[in-house]
Image (cartoon, helix red, strand yellow):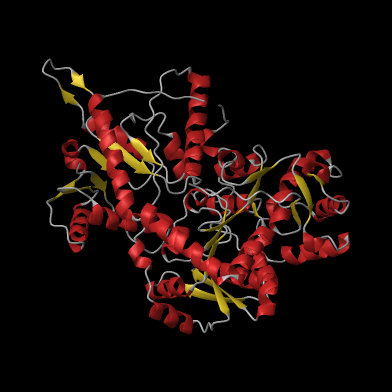
Length: 579
């Protein structure tokens, strides 16, 4: 096949004014597609002629000399010559309407023939928690998408989320309109790819990079790579606290821990929030920041690191490319057991997946409502939700400690991850999966097969309770009978001391920014006084709270786990290695 790439320069470059994950993914995909595609011609659908010229330059710059064809809305019917259009986002419903009009034609008997089968459409998920993404996915139910169209889900977790969105929309329409016929696109799971050769470093490069960071043989470098956003990427407090515990464990060996945060802060407020939190939570860890937007800083980071860490706890994440990049660089990884990380990182083989905790469905409808009514921005919606999602700090600390103690374990896991990245996630492999999907779509389109689907009701399907929509992301859900207890460091303290510690954490801007989802001081004290009595079912911890506030405070127990005040009483069983 010679698929058409829906091309806008902004979607395929990382040099724009606002660098997001979708830009990096788009740029990487285009490079991989042009390098590994079996196309005999390269097609682009563009909004403006200059975009077509830009596409042609990209094709030629990567050494492809095949013919280049560009299509605009003036000659949309020409898309039928290629047979498939790839869009770098989930909104193929809108383009299905375009197809139904542009592809229609008159038959010999002058009857108007549908244009739905003129070509196939293929989209891809990035984040699925934004209003735009949720609306685009929900709209697939009422748009003329066909069974020969596809929406690529980059992880099994995000496919579950997409399915819930679609089913909720179907249920609403069934109840209101009595619909019975459904036509849904394919929902294949295909991961994002990387260029594994970009993460090959010589011993000389590694040595020079460590020299730049003034890291001697007794210094272990832990790397976090990505946007430094506590509300919209990964809250760093769990990482800071776990590293502090691990640093104290290895101090007797003369080892020093240096945390390298290679990314960028959106503003000075966020930058200061990170500095304040690190100073409080990990005083024995040296924290260094590099600009992740600069290629030379990224190379220094990848070449120097001993361990990679990404404890993502945010619903805006769907796949997470950086752990795979770390694996390609031969670095063992410590990641949260969350969304796409569940697919990519094999626990105990490539590194460690750390258990996560999120309240059960039904406890965040207010957050969904605030987002739906524009009371909260998308960033605040993600931030408020993230504040109630926890990563197991002690298990993260144990993982760090194991890796810090053993260079052999680091080498073994690094080698396993590197082999996995090369065999499974290199664009050479992923493009083959894309081309196989596109061939299958073409086969279904030509045969014009039909299918249907159905399922359960939500008040507003595109604005669901995030703890329902994303309930497969964490390791465990916080439920009434979840056994909780004071964390190890808290068990030797009285309620006044514990409350004072919580107040010191609340002084951090990266904690108190989410004040609308946090309990009052009296409510926290009631929970702490109950927890001091020993391990017990989660719901019993809020029995002294007024009935009308119990659900609110109950979900906040996850926040107290996040801060390291409470912990799950029975340590979660580490997930089995993925196959």
